[in-house]
Length: 255
Ligand code: PGA
Image 1 (cartoon, rainbow, N blue to C red):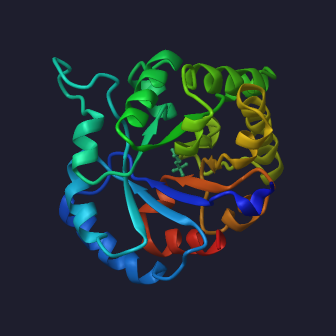
Image 2: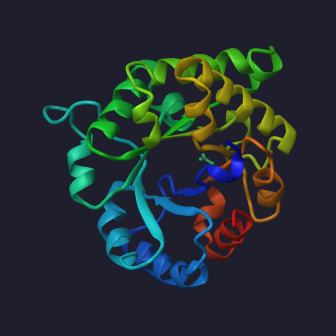
């Protein structure tokens, strides 16, 4: 199996941006620009409070909606958290787990990421698992060890069959929101290494079928070069997903 047989997925990660009314306006602007572009799946992961507006505005379009996190428990005394069941009922199809900002600012660990990932799967959501090294880790030559550990721990207890519902996003922390993109070769090398980890866990066929995205300052200018690489099957896009024109260029690049 080769790259052409994997599903390309271009996903936006809005982080803490956009209100519900801004969400409606954005989706109404974006939908006609990318209508008919069916060469990749298009997902926008939005803040919890924007989900209802996003789902409503994207009915009958090729845009699917995702959330930016999910709690590991089904319900209970977890103030401020959101369960998979809640997301599902709101029409969410995807969820991001393990974003480096969650790890960096909110104390998430490989183990909590594993719990959240399994909660997403248990509720029938497709999970975008983020992994990536910090600048120090890259400089000290432990990039592969880092992404390999993050990938293995996050996928603990996940079966080969479940992998149909998992996307891995390789996001070098030093490239996120910094305007510093990994070169296409650097990104491809690590995405290839992650595919190797998947092969060791689940076998070649599963590894070859899994969508691996690159994320970290992917934009309208560099998307085509990154997406042309063998192991890069899509993108997780922060800043450039907030501008419908830029996001449209990236979706076009993935066709
Ligand atoms: P960025 O964010 O595109 O703004 O660098 C990517 C991400 O954090 O997912």
